[in-house]
Amino acid sequence: GGGAPGATGEAGGQAGGGDETSGLAPTAVRGSVLGAVALITGSTIGCGILALPTRTAAAGFVPSAAVLLAASALLMCNALLLAEVNMACLRKRRAQASVSCCALSDVVSLPEMAAEVGGSAAATAISALYLALCYALLVAFVAKAGATIGAFVPWVSPAVAGTAFAATLAVATAAGGTRGADIINRWLTAALLAAFAVVMFGVFGITMSDWSGLGSVAWAAAPAAAPIAMQSLVYHDLVPVIVSYLGADRRRVRLAMVLGSALPLLMMLAWEGVALGFFLGPSGMHLAAALADPVDALTAIGGAVAVAVRSFSLLAIATSILSTALGMYALWLSWTSRMMSIGGAGTSMWNWLDGRASTVRKVALAAAMALRRPWRRYGARVFAMACVLAPPAALAACGDISEMFMASFEFAGAYVTSLLFGCFPPAAAWVLRSRAARTGDGATGKDGDGAASTPKSERELGGGMVVLATLLGVALTLFGTRLARDVGAALMGGA
Image (cartoon, rainbow, N blue to C red):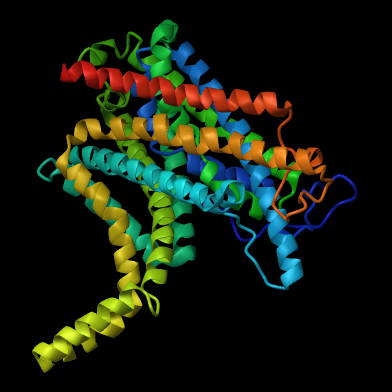
């Protein structure tokens, strides 16, 4: 959950022979690699960093670091594959635009990529997975916000506090438009990084005398941390935006993906080292006996460190809510606006209401007409925001909010992210590469039917189909292992 990069970027076309633009004409103005890295980093450092120590404490620092490194490598490869597929679809879109003389967006969304690969059924499946991911994360964020705010105002229900926090932030940002969202996001991200630095230095000062806690090793507990690690490091919904922002320059896109994956990884490794070094070491051993969450143990230190930890937690939740809620709001708003257009559900509703009012009482018709204009102006926005916030608020109110954060976050990482950003990128790349191999395409990246494809000269990840099969197999293994574990636990619990 971070701010979008600034509007100013590096102007440029192709500089000699070193500028790879994936067979596409360069855009007049392109953003900077630094801006793209900042966007990735700001979006990655969020609520996941709060969940990590809880699941990695049982394994220890070295096994959890290995899990983070493996998850980062897997996700970086899949991000490059997603960029490869995105640029292939963008080549087709620009070719269509040049023929039809119509201006088309340079941002090819995930459902549009899926439609190019597998038709409307694939697009529907990807849209459903994206919604499931966002709702699972929002439930986690509302639960964590409620628990964190509850420490300050214990007389308020955590579900109410979390929902009010999420609603206030989402509505205020949506009302401010794109510019308002960018400003709020930038300030929140800057404050988040400042609080992170205070926490790191504060806890480091307490732990620096003895780092023996980092020697705790339990490799058997490491696999349980994989879903949290995957979800904590994912940023792949931003890939279409980054490709467009960098003008589809392959070299710059690759550099942004590699650096954008490395920086959050280093921050999380540092966070893990400090949090687990304290929690598992002599300084925090007395707290570990009473508190299962290392973040709660850090809060129990008291003083400036406790204030910094609580501030960091709220800011991490805020940036996560902001990015997730606004993405969902834009999606629901587009659907709702179409639904309420002429001939849509909105018009049908008003025709029915007018008919009922005219047959019952004339005053009802007047009331309906008075409401028509504000509903048409604000109704889609209100309905879209309600669709975003109501389901997670209802789930948070019905469940045990103390356990909901980890349960929802793990569900998102183990199931939805494994399918959406673990399986989809290599599967889509496989289809487009196979398409190019069948038709013997050159650098144009289009087959005889005009469908998008990826020739060898436009591939972002080497290794051929063996690498794609390996990446797909790893993602399916993560999904299947967790599914078997959860089904087994459910069967044993019901026995």
